[in-house]
Image 1 (spheres, rainbow, N blue to C red):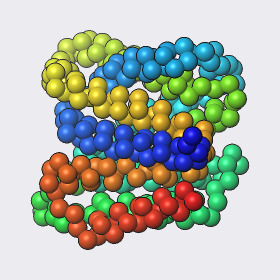
Image 2: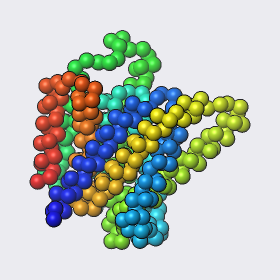
Image 3: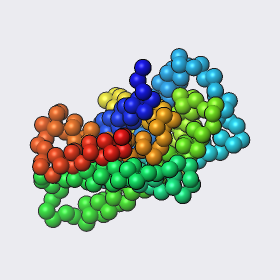
Length: 313
């Protein structure tokens, strides 16, 4: 039988792989004209049934009522709001700058999470975990370096504005994701909590929230006599399939794997390991798009693996 610590690390790496591959897929699918609210709604509509089926076959939602306890449900709602705002910020950043820039910036969420864990006293953040986290983030920064820039040497004001907004949104994503992880860590302290049910209900509430926003936005547009061209463009079968698949990979597989890992090895260790997802995007670029690996990127990869080893020992 696999040791729980090893299994927790393996699940965290699975979450990182899921998030990294989903981000690359979403960058390929997502266009600047697409509505983020519609995008998030579609992700949820595909993902929630997947989670319902998985949870039903694993435990028949046996611990579902625990999530609605007065001491649990408000924290769950806070987590939903945090992850919703974080994901919106991340997708907004993806619409403005390259995924190779958005992901490394957003991947600093372990630092914010570590601060929250230390301030709350919920978990001890040891020196080796902190050192490994720093090494990981430095490695991710090096990994983001490219040999050539895809932007013009004389960027327009719009591009400069997009870069600034994209960077700010990526940082906001990291901050809100850290709060989302922290609130879930509080919930997982309850002995009766089941991860599968929690993730399912969490994303069901989030999807319902985006559906309501979508309806309100649609009504406002109709009253103003405006059409929503982004809705028509996003209804393409390939785009729908890509967004749905991205949601299942990220929210479904990634979400379940990550929170199971937190149960096993704690948020202080699982969070920094999960932040290596930019490595997956670079790997996809090298293997699928035949992109070249620079020396600096290679050093970044070595630092990432070194950081994982420090945290995992």
